[in-house]
Length: 407
Image (cartoon, rainbow, N blue to C red):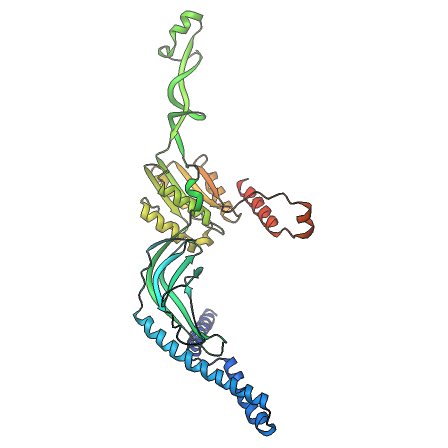
């Protein structure tokens, strides 16, 4: 049974490969179904209608259709050949580290070919996904400007070029692959002005009612049996005849030993941006470690952290399942606090975080990050009567989901 399933999978894979090769060959020839319809229709009209009936309208339309087909074929084919030859020598100088959401010049450009009539040249990125190409014309060349929609790690780029006429009669399409290593970081936007994230540990730096009594001896209380006599405040006893002793103040201190973890799921770009800001602004302390879903091991340098944050976009299906293993590793290294950067949309990751937090009470702080959240404006009577309020409904649903995650 297993061998039969394996052979079936191999056959389907072979069919997909051959289907892809056949489509690539068909895309390389310029004739389209529309060209066949116009050309054959024009030829048939000239042969069977314009000739026997001497219909001048059909005669003009027939010759015009044949002329358009010939013009499209004679312009698209040379343009595709010229562009293909230019692309073999073309280079690009894309920066190795980019930011999602910001337009970036890649250094790739092609000639305008404006001297060829009716020719349209377009290209897009088919690998990786989620890249918007915005060509910018300058002089006799068109320069490539791209915008990445989300973070990620890229090892190769595949551009698909399409040369066609403006009427769509002829079209040549092919894909060019190029090996390039890119790191796309999440866009931080206004998050650079977010409040500084700090974690705390036991210490005597900041008075805090939830801290442990490990600070300086500044608190006073009545003497009870068993207290050391050296902690008695004798000046108070001399004035009031009451025994009072000093005890350590309940206080905490900023932690210099912090772990951080990025949970991946749907709509996690804001969480990734918060993790990036925390690393770049050095608010995690002098000694820190960062992990993310899909990361092999905790990283402790800024460059490695940026790589882990960018590569985590490929592991959204893990949904926080790596948090428990990360905590086992960093706990052995002496880390006692962990900041979890989490998305705003509920999902399976919530159970993963709650399970890890339950096994280590008091060790976690969760930063729930969102983007573009705005208060729902009050709708006037006019807007309630004549507008559907789709945007307001979507914003209200987003707020409800965020509240559910926080709760």
